[in-house]
Length: 427
Image (cartoon, rainbow, N blue to C red; front, side, top):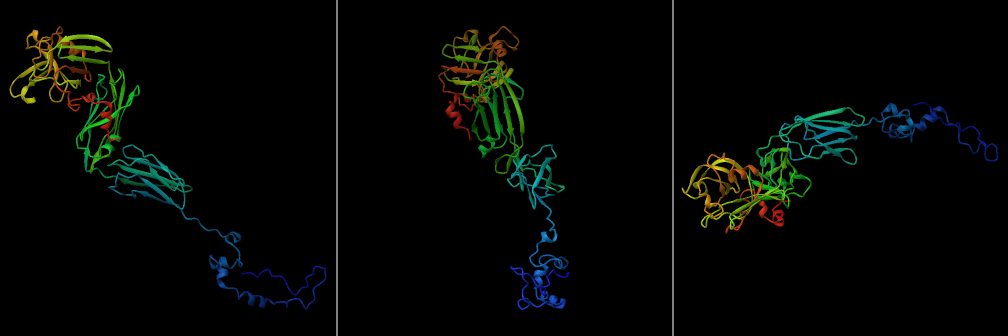
């Protein structure tokens, strides 16, 4: 430490009147040895302060690091990634989080080996970034994060594969065109216990826009429909975001896709089994009226609104498959269109007398009209109706002396009021 800049107090200083003070009032002068002795009485901690001995030797009591030019080195930012770098079987049911200490985050990017990226947001202090969605299962992620004023850092982790999985098989088929009565129906391969989580991950939208609501018929079936039939020409989009949604304990969805369908012209056919006729109305105009026969007194036809769910130019119908023993077995029923899961069809009939159609109800529950064996005769009613129909067309049966069909028996949810339909949603 150099000599302190201390004044020579043996010199006379002028007083306020400009005169010199008397020697009697002045303090005795100190020699160099005396000065060192006085300084030696200052405590050592004040000399050294918070610096090392070399720094302290240049500072006098009361000086600061700024006044002496001493610089305190800032701590380098530390970035932490959750899940941790190198994790091989990370969970996929929580968001990814990146935090920094001793700094703020400049940029964060999280990219999966499937090409996907995770969006996210910073907190108000930009010290934490949290992904807005969870990572996908069975995916390797690379995190690139950079703090302000520092180099970018990378980390990787791989999420584990789910134990059990489920998928939803949907109707109608992708890119198909259906009638105005076709609901979007999804059947799951595993029973769903968390209906709300699964339904929330599925949306059905329409152009032109209309409210579309889901209804659970069982723990494996969820249908969507609007309040009224679809408007002709509507475009429907089914968005499945089921991947990693936990439908039941430890059972996760696997699908993440969008599917589109189209609605064709509006055709509704009304079967009056008292009159034994069917009137076909397309886009508001009557297209045709056909004489028909329905179920007899012992095998009445379901009444209500039914939707064509399958179509066959020819098919086999066997009574044992619907609980009627060996009453019939016809290998080549022409122009058959399914109305219920339980076995109700509207089809052509070549084995009955032509007088039956429009004259009496004689079937085992199906509705049929005159047709020809081989399904190639274009002049018969069975052929004409089949050719005018498509999946999703509506067939309404009335005056059958039977109760209304169960809405879950086929694609027949239109038999529920809108209030009852919406009550079946989990949301």
